[in-house]
Image (cartoon, rainbow, N blue to C red; front, side):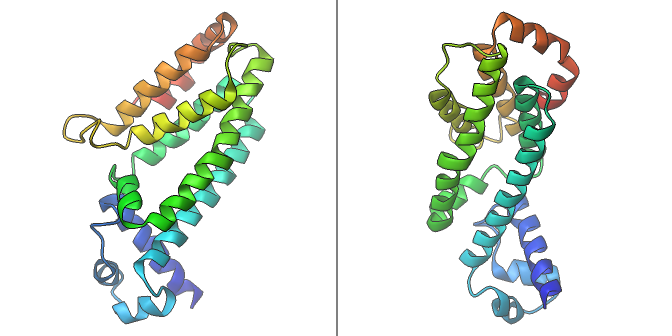
Length: 208
């Protein structure tokens, strides 16, 4: 039973991330799995329920990755670079329409994402910025509560097909450019020196 549930989740996640939530139906998932749609409905009564569980799994994994980064990073700059590399890796496998579809067609799940972003994700960024200020790598006149919102909105902005049409822009390049702009604005001279010494990490984290 649990094996079937996990197969459904894994297949649905793969299709959703590749094609977006709107474009993938329960019929598509059943065909990909080689099982009946009736079997899927034994585990998930509607598409919304499936989308919600997939989102929560992503959220749980992101929290685990975040905790690992915070525990292993030697300083706040490394934290930011590793977080950005994590986002970059995810962007490589996600259809840009995912957030738009979530907002337009799965509003309840979107509201969960918004709550997570405004509380947990934002607090993580605040803590990283505060650490960087204490270490002397980030400007002391920054307001982490403001800059954390900017950073998260920049990440979300890179998904916006109205601003950056996929036919013209690479989502990874957009994210890289926005992150570089953000980073350049918060570093102290000491931070810039450290940044220069981390070119290998920066290249991995911000170049598509």
